[in-house]
Image (cartoon, rainbow, N blue to C red; front, side):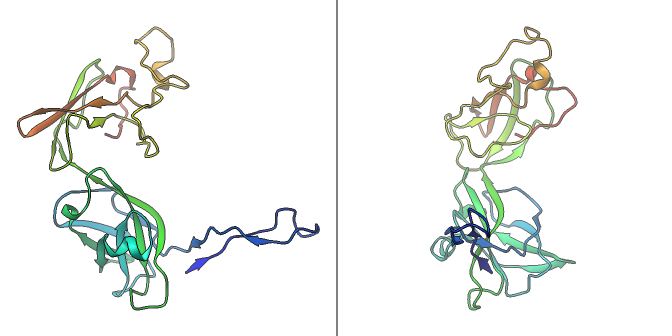
Length: 227
């Protein structure tokens, strides 16, 4: 169900009264998802940890968890695939590559009284379907090859990072602490270990394959980064 957040700014002993801040909170029955991304292909499966879910529960991927958005979103009913685990099959071809979707839940189905709510999880619809370069060396121009079913172009950008920052929309990333540009290796002792990502670079196409060249020399050997 959805609850209101009530705030008493000056506490219980002062004259101001508590009020509804107008930002409802959904109590989610979903504790986790098996993936953070799906492909733009048919037959995509997403497993959700949901002890309270039943055969009438409906899960949707949508830009926001409202009745209007969910009506045109991906999703539907699930099946109980394991203890407290429910599997949802999705047709990724119906989504927009490169878009981020919220995971929305209607615990008692569209015919029940409970509202649709935001579970707090999101799913990225990736255009890149197969990563052909699972490992690269530290190099000023390390090439990563991949396949892209839909949505990729010469304007697409990619980078390696400890975590993908979904709040960045202009392609400008901080490489080191407080720096937005690459620093040559060895010019600042200790700086290399502070790098949490490479700078984003544009895609190149070679037939059915796509690639991007990244300066992985700023990253730490032995660590795993997200693409």
